[in-house]
Image (cartoon, rainbow, N blue to C red; front, side, top):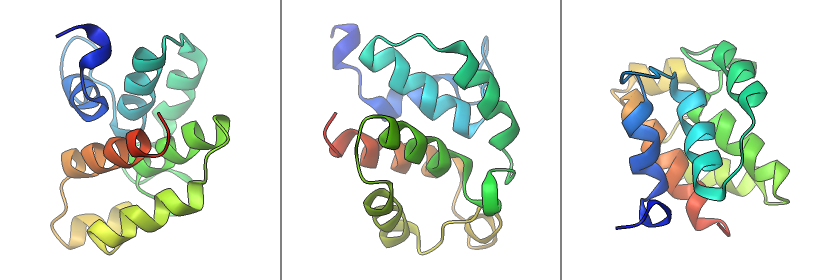
Length: 120
């Protein structure tokens, strides 16, 4: 399997709270996307450090927030991505997702799967 054949979700989960990078949910999604498309923007990853653990704007899931940002950069529809996320998990905020037993890893995987299906 070549590096380009690795699913986006697998890329993100490989660095989500895992050494050596130990990235948060938002960072993991952006890092996986950058690796998949050959982009290198450490400033984006650094900026997303503040968006993990329920600290994304409006309390939005950090993984979802990062996927929305990436999709907006590529001309995609962040609202459709949010709807897909809500369809799968019934909630968009970190607090509600956790309250209803949705794991952070599941959110990372879902955000990546939706991002990958939207024209990657």
